[in-house]
Image 1 (cartoon, rainbow, N blue to C red):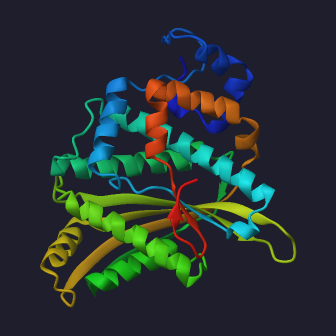
Image 2: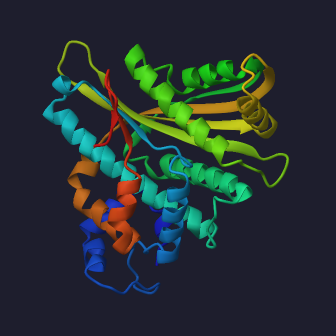
Length: 313
């Protein structure tokens, strides 16, 4: 069997169009010798491991964010794109889940601080690989922006720096930035509550923030869908100092904050997702088995309507 984890979404779609996925979905038996390019179910124990971890720390892996226009501005085209984005988000998550448990079949217990940090880092790096290696047919990425930070900052200045790096380039109005600020605060608080520990002194806290949004085209009634991801790697000592300062509440104390950052923006061609939604939903069902509903409910993105509060699709 061809290794499903190495297939691009385009190959996935072709597999379904050749009736291979449809045939597999009707069968309860999946073997290595079928000769078809079929997805393999993720083991139940791995799916349960994810659900157990998720119940302990829902923000241990930051949720995807979708910023949508005000309801009055949502056209049929934008609505259909939102549905496609939600499906794409599910596919990315499922493939990320398959990869992390392939690399660590024993799973994690994020109640253990060292395993919690390894889970966050493993999930973020796997999700980044899925996005950058398997979505070439869906997203046209630009060259991206990379930077290194090494500054003496207060904890508030660190927060503002992260907010600007992750969300500052989109031109969102203040009401939307306030909502994104709350999301960033929740991520930091959850990481802090996990009392993260690291395997080696050189380990960094790596996490990925993915945001979908729409850019209107001036002069015509059209808004194009984009994905932007921000990959953040915070120095271990910097993170520990942030946590310590946060616990003692000394907001004016400064720390040497070190961080590397990479961001990339891509215009999405969602037509393949829309056209082949049946095949992709079949793939998700095969992967997740009888836990598909429970898991998809847990991973729904944070939806921000410009100027209004968070909600889910």
